[in-house]
Image (cartoon, rainbow, N blue to C red; front, side):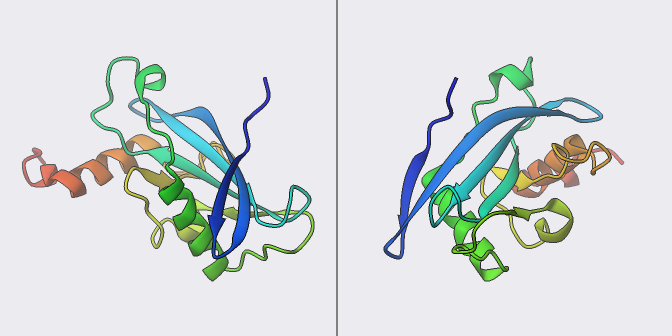
Length: 147
C-alpha cells in the first residue's frame, strides 16, 4: 500500500510530507508512534524525519490499536520551523536530517506528541515513563500520585 504524500505551504514554499503509524513498546504499555518525513525541495532533497510519540494517557485497553493520535498540519509546520532553525538544509540533495529525542526533546514538544528515539534505538528511554510524565505535567497528577 502506498503512503499518501500531503502538501503544506510555508512561506511560499511547498513541503511534501507523510506520516506512518507505528508502535513502540515501553515498560508499561505499547504506544502509538508516528514517523513523519518531509521534503522542502522535492523527493530528492534532504528529508526531515521526526518520530513522534503520542502523549495519550492513561492508555486505553489495546492502546496500540485504539490511540487515534495523528499529527496535524500545525504540528508539521512546527516541525519544519524548528528544524530549519536547528540546521535542516532544505535545498541540499540527499540524506536525512533527523530530529532526535536525545538532541531535541528538551526544546521541542508538540501539544499531542513527544520526540522519541525508540523506533530507531531499542535502548532509548522508556516511552511509558515519558508519556506518564507529560500527562502528569499537563494535568497536575504528579502532586496527587503516591510516592
